[in-house]
Amino acid sequence: MSADRTVEIKIKRQMTPDGPSRWETFRVTVRPAMNIVGVLMQIAENPVTVDGKATAPVSYDANCLEEVCGSCAMRINGRVRMACSSLVDHLQAPIRLEPMSRFPVVRDLQVDRSRLFEDLKRVKAWIPIDGTYDLGPGPRMAPREQEAAYPFSRCISCGSCLEVCPQYNDGTHFVGAAVVGQVRLFNSYPTGKMNAYERLEALMGPGGIHECGYAQNCVEICPKEIPLTQAIAEVGGQVMRHALFEFLKK
Image (cartoon, one colour):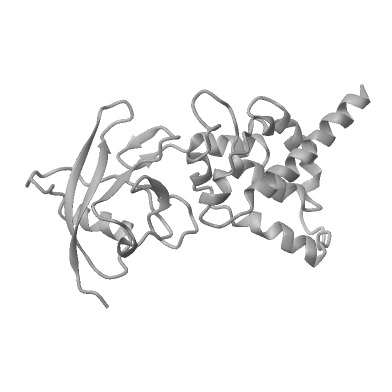
């Protein structure tokens, strides 16, 4: 096991959403198998830059520290990663930390992912059961169908797939691969099919699946290895059949 060592950490700081950004460099003593969240916690204990200037502790989001909640996604050495599972031992120094670029900055490494959550609401990424009680067991799914749907339930809404998507920016309304993956998930369940019509209608409108450029960056970056391109292909087929059916009804 390697001994403790000193590593320089360059962090892009921004104190307010509309304020200017700047870089600050810190020197941190890291232990073997230490992650980026641990580095940020150590900086918070003594927020002094390499030139001896006292500064405010770095703001960032983190919760589960087990790559489950998705809140600690940030750009680490230019690549979006989860800070809780990014080990300093595996990163090239000096280590650069920046906020994700596709979401508005709140402060430092914190970003506002409201757009993602609003898009999930837009496609009804849940199964509404309000007002139903003691109805007995739900419809059964074949094991093969369960196994096909399970990978899409692993999404942690981190936004990594959106960070690398060329179609997801301020000039578009594209919902992104994470949202499409959840449509694939909920439309596959017998109870979820109750709202399949509304989900597909949402994906036919502005920002729908037709705006996907099929760059396939999403499936390469996903920390949970979700087959997002498969979801895009399958949901794209569902949307086309839905559109054709609606056209023939007129």
